[in-house]
Length: 484
Ligand code: BGC
Image (cartoon, rainbow, N blue to C red; front, side):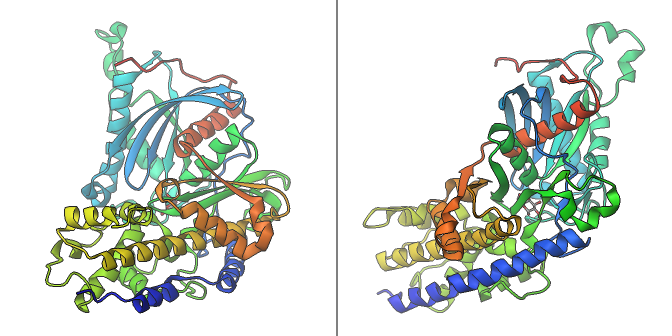
């Protein structure tokens, strides 16, 4: 016997639906928050100047390394910029364990340096006496007053490594890089130089947020790109701002007509004010139980880290109320974060009459049998949670578009992250949201998937900063990745 009724689905529909009116109110609040962040330091939406000196020309060339520390993986990339908006990339991915996210911060950077060394040893030969410029994509809020320095304001996305918040992560990473001994060349083997060459043959040239990297990489390939958004484990946006419109940087002495990429750190929107975002009791539960309660409230309603968890908590409550999984033990479902956000997308896109995908997910991962009515409810709920996330994301995009006056022209927003790339329907919900906010003009906003943006972007930024200061070509001769 099933207890799931249409009324129940309607109840959740009301709870998770954002009306166009509500969305427009959020956009207004969001615009104010963006302006405030540009005006003064230490605001809820931090609007961090990245010190990326304007757009790339597309003519940057040479070999660059990038280390990309995201929410789930660590990537090391060799990016060869070919000019004319073209590049080649060779990369390796390393999985981060939950322990590493909470172990001492220096150990995390040691791991990054070890992976980089491993990548160099296995794939590259770097000409003796040279250093390859390295971009470090570090996707957490960092205050910068130079491109090659960044003080971690606070961890997000479930990270909590001690001894890192409030410290310059570039300096920490350099410390880890210096621990390695460079591979000795044959001529060094029996000479005093053998022990002299400390550290990897790289020069950490730039610390880059993934959004800023995506913005720059996308613009390198297609100069129409104006705004970059990540909908992945975390959620955030970057765009290019006029110096004249960043009042908090007036004393930096830069020309008013110069431009600077801004890392919005919009995941924190409304965290302290609590004025705009409608939160359900499930959102409150997640916030209370996480390692950073009260922080990143916007992100907690949107990003991939949390959507599966919202779904899981609803199901646990319905089981406790005796409405689901009759006479079954849901112990596996009771484990926090056991329900992956990827499952929501699989359930939402299931076209089979019996909803076979849900049967598989629940029996295989949670040892639970489900009725067809339950599975239909799950599909509705998955859709509602993803739709709300996409519509909130649309509010953030709309705020930047409208603040910058981009609505009357075609505005290209580049997007990366697992939610946008893998969740069926996410992009449709996003565009439907933009039309609900702006009417027909919402169609002027085009979103495109930005491929490999975060790694390639930090390589391009390393190129922009090093080639600006020095000679036009890359500094180091890197012999291409070895064939395995
Ligand atoms: C971080 C941002 C990052 C975003 C996407 C958020 O949790 O605060 O810096 O850009 O995740 O990775």
